[in-house]
Image (cartoon, rainbow, N blue to C red; front, side, top):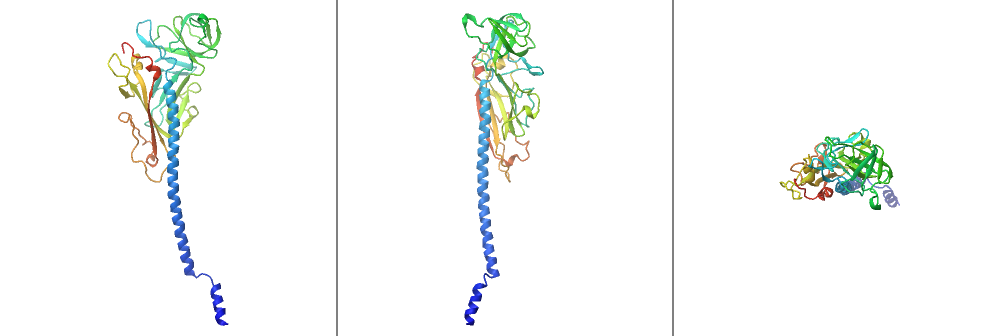
Length: 361
């Protein structure tokens, strides 16, 4: 009787303190192991996800840049002889007033680090380019007469019953002959069409014998730069891109931390052969320099959004143009704690290349 009572009491007494402590220690070891596995797994996940984000951001940014660069110069890349018997571009190199208070000086199909564009992040480049949205030819249409300051009589307009090159609300630029020096031009819109006359909102006197360039209803004057580790773009048709205000420069690709660019030039002694021989950042200074510019080489550097605990990048990425324009990320003190991807390409400037090999250049 007493033996049965003692055995029952022992069964109801539960675990001893030692047993509880051993069980708790085993449980804690199990939790620590699971947390370590989870932390390692989460680290791999963040690295993979961050790499995917960098891949997507860089690809999106590069696509937009390539699309615009390929079109650079369309509709205004004519190479003509002026009255002084010297070859010259009609619009390239001129100062173009887009509207009151907004002028692009020394207009070029593509300009690296244009003086009018505010610098972006340290050790990055800016791009400024433009092209027409019109189907009209790049030489412009000859102005036969100017019955009024804002009315131009066009030789080709409705000639032989053909389709007119101009339409209401097209943006146009009147260029006198010979080319003025300095070359100061203005953009305006077509307000009315009648027979062979094109009436514009604001005309410029003395254009008889010159040309009227049709830039279409949606010409592109855009600038790109890196701001606070993001690729941004400014549309000159909407904003003044010489203004540094953040509202003028919306982000088009996040975590793109560097943009470097170079001109691809034909350096063969005259006559040129139309082949790219060298890449550099020397902006064309005259007509022959422009016609020798056949391509643009650029690189975008994107980074993961995840700031790592330790340094994971020992050295800045390199690209084909590193010898003259290296990628430098040191503007961010924590740059080594990010992972990076580079997106590099060479884009032909086809609207210049189609001019062919020019005599005297």
